[in-house]
Length: 128
Image (cartoon, rainbow, N blue to C red; front, side, top):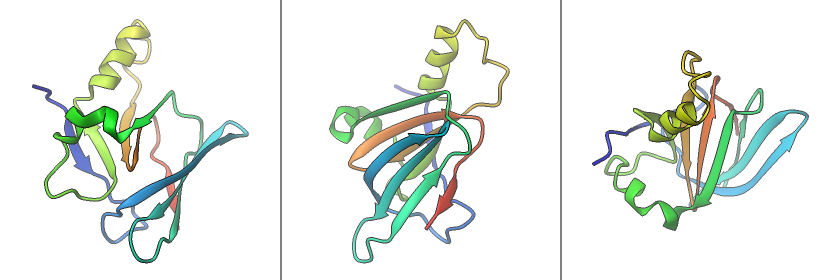
């Protein structure tokens, strides 16, 4: 059984967890932007603006992460999670021969109809 822990991340600009759906991902001028919208009534547009390009971006359809879905808190608390004891971060560090092991990298999971894992040094700005 995995020891990963998915903790809901509520951005400072938001009062509560947001249930989001994926629209697009764009890399431009060395920065990443993930475009989303609120699921349900308002469909308000939300952008995750990363100040620099993350060290790793992995995107798969949610149906390919069924075992990971079981690790999310119940009831679901939005779409943004910080992952503690990250197996992805551990594998990344192993593959890089540990050269990033002392860097303060974080694992952010964006769980929508697509599952996006991002390894980064700084959390994104959330624009609504």
